[in-house]
Image 1: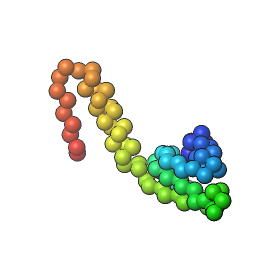
Image 2 (image 1 turned 30 degrees about the vertical axis):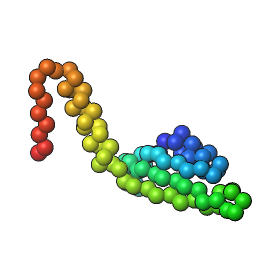
Image 3 (image 1 turned 120 degrees about the vertical axis):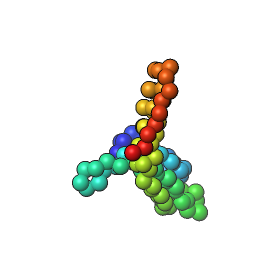
Image 4 (image 1 turned 180 degrees about the vertical axis):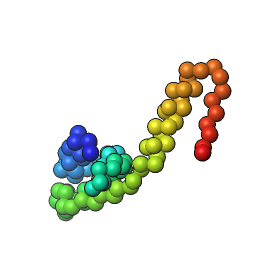
Length: 88
């Protein structure tokens, strides 16, 4: 997990704000996976953060496809020929 991203989330939440970000997490077996996090603070009657709600979504597949598209874009930008994409 990116420490800078998590520190920013803590800082924003401490001020009563909300934070949306993407971080890489690791399963107990060490396998990496991407998570989109949506942190929201719920304030008390004085406007101070009372508790927090976090929704996390596994976005690993989306991140992998984005990486593949970047590679295809790089290849396509360096050729005058057609580029075919085959899904096996």
